[in-house]
Length: 185
Image 1 (cartoon, rainbow, N blue to C red):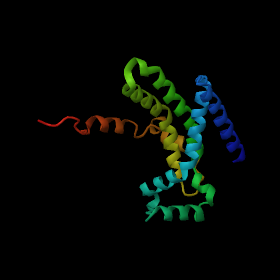
Image 2: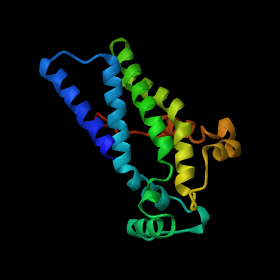
Image 3: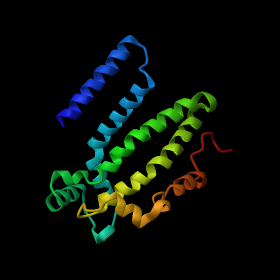
Image 4: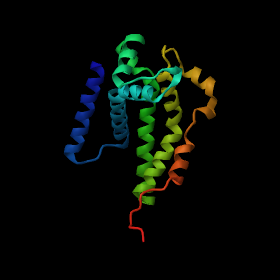
């Protein structure tokens, strides 16, 4: 944990030095800082994500009444505080490529096709790379004994199974009526 804090302080000092001179840092530094920020953010909110996933799931017939009930059960029955971070490895492994892809595609496309289209393109590319890691993360979070491994998930689902749910939100986005921006006649 001390090493992570040291890296964070060092990264903030580097970013502050570049901001003070008003010269943008090289792309590799921006990518590294984006990945570091994403990793730290993931570590901070991960226990909340685990609780949310457990509350949304009915796997194993378990039904929770509150977030506190989930936290209590995870800590007391599944291995203490470290159990709140089950499945974080795929999340951390996915944060750096996720942020890198999103930033690079967006920055490359924004001048050619505008802010909204470049954001959509960047998000679409991000989903292709990170959805398998999200599927693995959720499976690991729902594993009560914590013994589920990446190879177990891949052998159970296969490559197409790692993209489960990718097309549905895009289809729902096209089919769902949105709010009207102008008054109806």
